[in-house]
Image 1 (cartoon, helix red, strand yellow):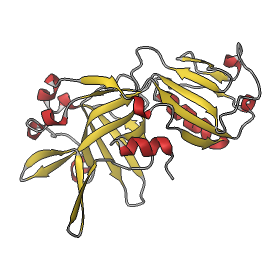
Image 2 (image 1 turned 120 degrees about the vertical axis):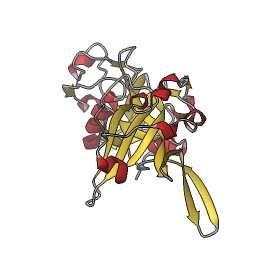
Image 3 (image 1 turned 180 degrees about the vertical axis):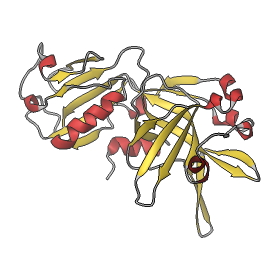
Image 4 (image 1 turned 45 degrees about the vertical axis):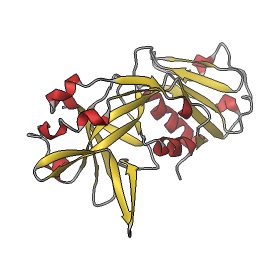
Length: 259
C-alpha cells in the first residue's frame, strides 16, 4: 500500500520516481511500458526539443511546493529503509553510497521526508499548438505502438532528505561529530545531525535532482499527435478526469536512455 508521501504526490498529479541523474528540466520525452508478465519500465528518452524543436522556446516557470514537505512522510521498516534511502538520495543528486549504518538509531521503523521542495514547469497550454509537429522517426516501434509515450512538463525537486525514527523519538546514540562513521556518501553531498531526532542529507547546490514529475500522454488521432495531460474515465454516464499517472501508488525506477 502506498505511503502518505506517495499518496500526496499522486493526489497533486505527480508520479514519484527514482531518477539516477541530476540536471533534468522540462520538457522531456519519456515512455512507460508493461510487458505480458506485468513487469514495468520507465524510460527517460531526453529533451523534448530534440524531437520537437519548437519546444526549445517554451517558457519555464519555477516556484516552491511547500505543501508536500516534511509533514508527508514515507514509512519504512529497517530492511526496506536502507534500500529506500539509497534510492531517495539519488533524488537529491547523491548517486553513490558506499556505507549506511542505522544501528545507532535503536529503531526498526523509519520515516523519510523531503524539504526545500520546488518545481520547474512549462505550461501544458503552450504544448497544445505545437505538439503535432513532433518527429518520432527512429524511435523504437514498441515505444510508439505499445508504450505510454508522454511529455514530462513539470519536475519536483528537493534540497534535503530527512531521516528520523518512525516514532519520532530521539536516536539512542548521539553521533554528532562522527556521522561519517555511519554514513559514507562517496564524497557527494553532505550528511549531518538535525537535532537529536533526525539526520539531514543534502546534495550539491547545483544538483537539480528530481523525485517526481507531471506528464501528459501523447496519442495519435487522425494521423496527428495530441497531448493529453488528463485521463478520462467513464463509469456509465459519469465522466471523471484525472491527471495522467503511468503507475499510481508506487515510485518508479527510471532507465536513463537519453537520445
